[in-house]
Image (cartoon, rainbow, N blue to C red; front, side):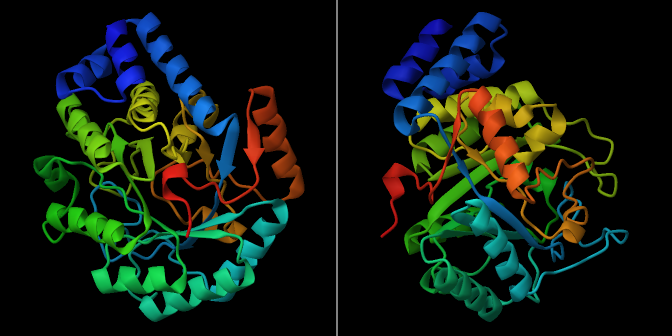
Length: 349
């Protein structure tokens, strides 16, 4: 089994059978070796730097009704909100003063926040903070919408593919959503010139190890700029309320495998991982991740952006929070990187 880790390190690829064996491996020595090698590759490419993205959760309105998500349109108990452009710019200004050089606008698929609103907001951010990257994570749109966002100055777009299995996708989404359209959106984003991020939930209902192998092969072959993987966590107001959470250990293993498949990829240690187990984000960094996304949204909005229950906001509100994170990372052998933090293979124009 150790030979599979060596092949992954040396050749940055494995076939489906090899990936499945690593995912099913119960040899603690082999898995520890996998983590160690992934960390070494991250250090070789990026040093000990951890890139920070200021996460701004702009709206919890969503037209979709995904079975796993607390923002689903049928969740009548959720107190809905949407930020104004001025709210977002205020968040950016506060985050910039702390040291952030990437802002992530994330939200449900809110039809009120139309293309004109998005492009104007992105343009204002880029005008006020020209040395910063803007990442959007606003779901499935038309090709024309994505083109407008890119022309307005957005640099990156995060759209989790969720699963590369059509049958599994259909278990997670209602019939008015389409696996084919999700994949089409990812292709459009690449064609338009975004630094594209994809990813999946780990342990989502109905997921098998073969599904995860399909995901890894898709990631290997499409070579995204970023991959976001976090454990499935249930929300009480969804059809999956009583489903078990995903595995932290499997999530960490996937982080290491993706790091070895794509050495230059940007890999977040996600909020969901930190919500599932104490110190989860730090464990993610030790397994090969190199991105953290502290929440810089307004205080009164954070609890309402309830994708799942018991969410750890991972908030950063002040210089003291920045210094505390800096010290935590330093003690673990990492350092905060000041800058946009681009994937070396997808440098900005």
